[in-house]
Image 1 (cartoon, rainbow, N blue to C red):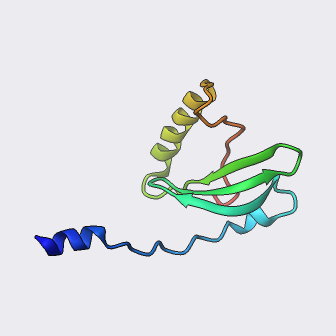
Image 2: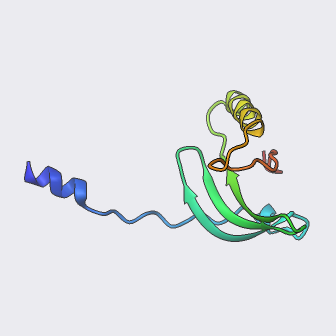
Amino acid sequence: MVGLFEEALRVKEAPPPPSPPEWWLDPDFGYRIDAFAGRGGSGFVWRATGKQDRGPVALKLIPFRGDPESLRYRWAAEVAALAGLRHPNLVTLRGQGTSPDG
């Protein structure tokens, strides 16, 4: 039993952060990537700054694997729900879209 607790408490090294997609580095992209912020069950998040005086933002990149149509439908529904919410403990949705590489 002690071995189980030791294994549960062992700190594992996180994998290295992914590089931002090349198209984010395009001068016409509206944001400057500042740093990798984290990863979750659905994708990756970077801290960024809007180039047109939009201030700090979080950019979330969600890789669509499996059935891309059902995932796009699910995320469109979540974006629509978030767009209608206003609360100090929630992020403000400033935009959403599909990447040039799909």
